[in-house]
Image (cartoon, rainbow, N blue to C red; front, side, top):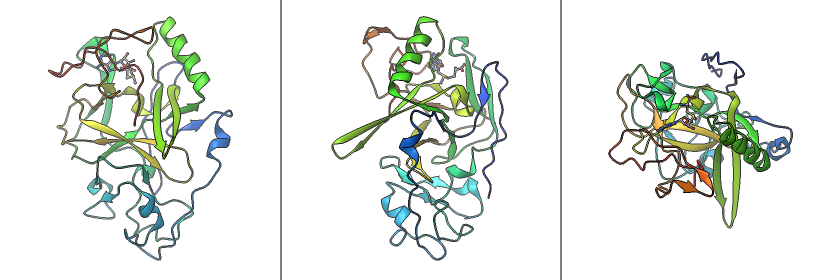
Amino acid sequence: MEFTDEYTHDIPGVIYFSRNMPTKEVEHLYQHDLQGCNCKSECKNNACSCLQRSGTFYKYNNIFELNSYRIEDFVKGPTYECNENCKCNSRLCGNKLVQFGPRKSLMVKPCENEMKGLGLFTLKTINRGSFICEYAGEVITETEAFKRFQYNNEHGKINYIFCINEYFGETSVQTFIDPTYYGNIGRYINHSCEPNCKLFVIRINDTMPILGIFADQDINKNSEITYDYGDGQLDFKNLGGCIRKSCHCNSKKCRKYLPFNVSLS
Ligand SMILES: C[S@@+](CC[C@H](N)C(=O)[O-])C[C@H]1O[C@@H](n2cnc3c(N)ncnc32)[C@H](O)[C@@H]1O
């Protein structure tokens, strides 16, 4: 099955781009292709090298029906999907999901509370564990992220930069994704202190992390898709010398301010 993403946006200065796009300063980091598995037909947990290095896997009722796929475990990660170097039978492999593109029936529209701007909504009910879409954009250096963040702050512009923190033993690696100028439908997802989705790091063909957004509960049709931009930071208005924006998620658990540094840990 081919990757399909038929969504668009016609905001001046923003180009719809469905996958992460490393800038030339960081592209050398992702030139290492991941090895594929040697499975003969379908991939089984105890034999497939992709599943063995994954922190979690997909459960499905019907291998040909992407809507039946659910992520198995919200605690572990990252996930390694089978890739173009794998020997498994691509029709029978169940270890592929994010690589087929976002789910259908998503809609971008202004939120009721205009302070939040645009938001992403679902026109159909979504089951817990289902894949929604990626958070895709330019992959930039930390220096560039800092520069862009300062610029956004000084000019009162929306900040879209997302920082992924990953830990490999003693080493921590940060990846900065910015869908401000090139991005997909994930850029419209707002923060909530009581969200209905979670993010997962997925890898497919190479070492570049892909941010996958998955439903963390059953979501009713016409609901807004949200995730928590942070990790329960305290309600200090001035964090690191930066004035934080007020949160309008309207939840009883609201922490009052948007998390400053969107991170996964
Ligand atoms: C990734 S964008 C989300 C899409 C954005 N609403 C838009 O119109 O393009 C993040 C920005 O949306 C706004 N936002 C997101 N969640 C919010 C919330 N709970 N309360 C207030 N503003 C929010 C903030 O301006 C934030 O910097």
